[in-house]
Length: 69
Figure: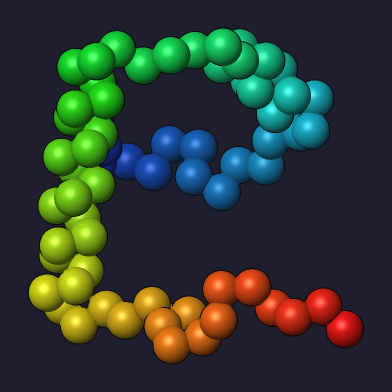
């Protein structure tokens, strides 16, 4: 089967114990410089595409911090 064609375990519920184990396995992981550059380029491309398609942040024009009270 080619990768990405079938949904696999889409919608599968993962227990909290399994989630904790997966989080512990990634604890302290630092991506390589090459990976960081790739992620940065992908993120830039994603935002450029969203903005080009008319995306507007739902917080645009609203204050950053809500006043207490």
